[in-house]
Structure formats: structure tokens, C-alpha cells
Length: 255
Image (cartoon, rainbow, N blue to C red; front, side, top):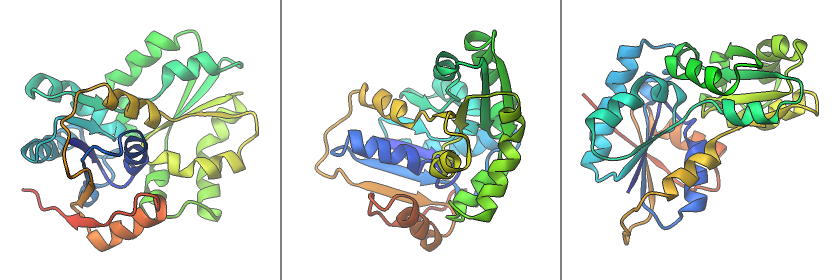
């Protein structure tokens, strides 16, 4: 079984890629909506929640766990890999592919505060983009909008303008979607921004990495979704954001 955890519904953008590539493999997804967003939480808080969700997924039989949350990856993945015997696959801003794609020499990184403040992100920039101009921008409103199922309209356009103005003025031609929530706003971003802007989203790469691990075959290959928030509200969001999944959501209570 594949375990997936996220602060909310953003990781559904990763789940749909995994289900598309591995439709016969059981998946359990947890959205920690009661604590969403992670991006403005302290590192100890994020680590505590990620460990609690990991313990639950392993108890359910997870053979590999995807941290479909950039903030959780930045804060917790090295700890998890050191303390648990199964593989962990994390999300990280696609600095390397962006660096290879840019023609202007300037890339923009749309991410969460936790992701941008982590040492892991700074190492990525130093390794892959040290000769480029990298402009970073926390985007808390993007997560809030997606968690409300608002993907178009004046609020979205205003947030896009606010978060991209500086990087566009600097000549950025590649924007990294550095949070699993942000791909749901990619159509709005593409419609709002100049046609030459290219986007980096790592969801499909995560799915391919999951497929490289040996996974047990199960007669039950369904995807199960759990939330620490309100199941009815999250089920509505699932049907709105990823109608192709056709999945409802159940409640999960953690200590």
C-alpha cells in the first residue's frame, strides 16, 4: 500500500498522478486539514504532525510514504528516513529543471514560508542555480484559495498579480510551483501571465519515483482518503478538484 500525507487537499494533485500511473495499487491518503496550512507553522509543529501521520500510515500497512507537502518534506523527511525502515518520497521545488529551462537566467519560486526557510531549499539553489537569479515568494493565499475550492475569479487573479509582480518585472521566464496545492491554480496562472512563462510541477516525477519501489499486490486497489478536518467539506473539494478520482472522504482522529 502507498501512503500519502499532506496538510490538506493539495496532495490530491500528486494522488491523481500516482493513480494514473499505478491504478492497481492500494493508496491511503491523509489530509491534515485540521492543521492546514503547514507553511506558517513552526518546524517542531510540522515534525510532530508528520510523525503522527507517518505512524498511522505504517500501522495501516504502508510500504512507501509520499510526503505530498513541500513544507513537511523540508522539515521532516531526513528525520523520517533516519527513524523508519520504509522509503519516503518527498516534494521539493523543481529548481534543477527550472534552471535547465530558463532562457532569461531568472526563475521564480512560488512556495510556502516553511519551504523557503529550510536549508534543503537553499542547498538546491546553491547546487543547481548558483549562477542564476532566483526570486522567491511565499504564497499563503494560494493554499487558502485551493482549500476553499476557489480556482478562478477576482480573488485568484489578485493573488496571482500580487505574488508574481516582482519576478515578472525581473524577467523571470520559468515559475516553480513549489507547493502541491499550486498545480490546481496552474490554469489560472497560465491564463493570467504572459504566454512565454513556463511552469515546473513535480507531481508526475513523484509518481514515477513511487513506481520504482516494489509494492505488494492487493485484491483491494482502491484509494482511501482520510481527513483530520470535516469529511463532508473535504469530499466536496475532492469532487471539485479531482472529479476523475470519484472518492469520498472519512474522518481521522489523531492524538
